[in-house]
Amino acid sequence: MPGQYAVPRRHAGTVVSVNMSSRKTVRKTRGESGTLVFDRGFEGDAHAGDWHRQVSLLGLESIGTMVAAGLKVGPGDFAENVTTSGIDLLSLPIGTLLKLGDSSELEISQIGKVCHTKCAIYYAAGDCVMPRDGLFAVVRRAGEVRVGDLIEVVSLGDGTCDRTPASAIAEFEAEKAAEAAALAIGRRPDRIRGSSAEAADIERASPVQEPDRHQNAESG
Image 1: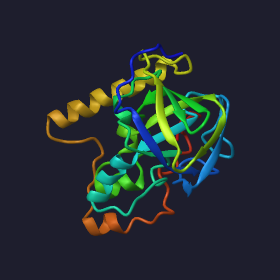
Image 2: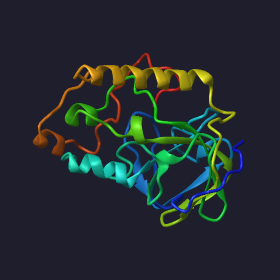
Image 3: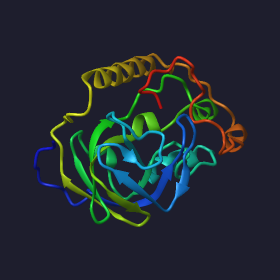
Image 4: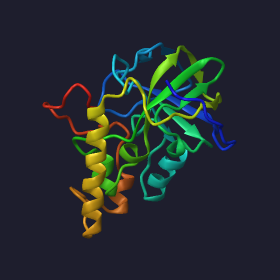
């Protein structure tokens, strides 16, 4: 569980959208509310389960960078469960405890993720914010989450979460190192940049990730 640290005032925000899907590898449907189940995730969502990435969060500010690149995207299109606004998600260490609304609490379990297969957004724009800017969490207290709910930081974490396997952290760190090395020599792995017109024509129904029959249980 997270340690108790002083919480800077910038650590407060708002729920912009609650998004869910009945299967993985697709964009989530934007909604007004959802029910968090203890140590599972959102009721009815494909990513809920007995693992460390039960709930995902992404800032509206990060989505805005993709809109600026010419994509017609919005909340839920990156398969995040909770779209936030006004809170500096990337400044929150693993183990941070967040309160959403009246009673729900999430503990940050992972920052960013490895995409084993690139998504349609990546191939159109040459980038995708979810692997870099998305946060993942486990449900520590059940409850309802609604659009307009306040997001508060109860305590800042110490960089650990008892639900996060060491292998997940090692895999992500290795991926970041590989990308940094590629950028240092002026290229990016698997980067394909489309035109602005191609980016603008991405359909909302297109998969977030290309289907991979060999993906393991922790993909998505």
